[in-house]
Length: 174
Image (cartoon, rainbow, N blue to C red; front, side, top):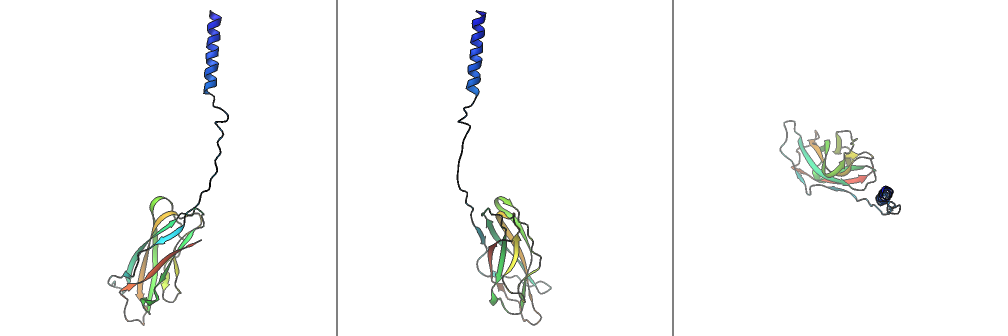
């Protein structure tokens, strides 16, 4: 009896151990697929931007939020470029005086901006101008880039316009 009970216990232990060992075939899984990145886009307010009254120093300051989405997944970086409407007027000088980025939604890798401010957008420098950038391996996701501008008169001009037309676009690469 003692031997039969020991044999039964040994068989039960062996069966339990075999039941807990996973099959070698079940552990091997392979899968293939293709991951495609999205695009690089900029969405800015449409139409001319109305300017507030002049500051005491004769300049008009304003900010423009632009939503930039980099869903490419390439790590190339990107630049936010602005072009001023040449009909804004002669004798005015438009400068981008700074910019900031905030994650607009989801998961973001913050952009590393390397632009040195101020950046001349309209005046003696040719338009368009880079007003913000994301260095390589940064700027993944959806961001609101808020650029601050200052519009001033050249000494020979009569008046600052009441509105300014700006066009924003994104370009791949730093």
